[in-house]
Amino acid sequence: VSVCTDILQFVGAVDDPRSCQFSQMMEERLKKVFSEAQSKVLGVHSKLSVQMLSVSQAAGSSAVSLVYSVKNGTVFLNGTTASNLLGQLSSELVGYFLFYPPLIVAERKSQFGR
Image (cartoon, rainbow, N blue to C red):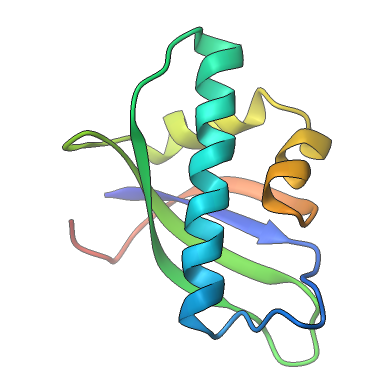
């Protein structure tokens, strides 16, 4: 399974990346940005869902790493497809939906099961 990895430059001081609430909030925001990308790039509106697999922040760093999978119904989107879809949007627009500026959006092979 390949998944997407986003690295945010920073998050707000009041947001705790270790909390479930932060993970859920980012899932919802990612869902919105993928919906926008589908609409603008592909001209389609299908129901995508996002599942957060990991959120981490290195000690002393302001950057936060998000690892997640994207599904279209029951089918997982390939990480390359998902990251390329987001790559069609400007980083400013992705940051607008996430509320935080992205540093990197990439695919990676996952050790997580389906």
